[in-house]
Length: 178
Image (cartoon, rainbow, N blue to C red):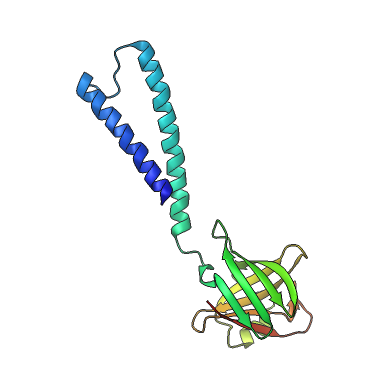
């Protein structure tokens, strides 16, 4: 919102300059002296550059204010196996999570996926119709698949598969604490 205010101020200032110049000379941005014109053209070029940057900032801000698919995961989650804190990232590519599961601490990048590599465990569960996601641990180079069920506000991680390979284990479920 702050960038919108800055851009608004710049636009108002430019319109004010144009209006006062037009009132004095009958032509917007017309100047009497060549040096003054060159100086004002440089200032105008700087204002145009600021406007262009402001437009990019506003477009990006508009994208950031739109709901991202994984915004629903942001918060603190807990279950009998551990807990997870999910935080947003600058773009809509996913969310970040810090976890403590079975006493193991780590970080995930959680991203949406269209299909699961090994859907059998998740599809057979009561959470098979939720949002399909992937928990990626970039530091240790592995991922688990999972889902988010908005109806029950439940986050599910499939620990029975590691990088798409069955390794045994269970589905763990977490509920939002805040």
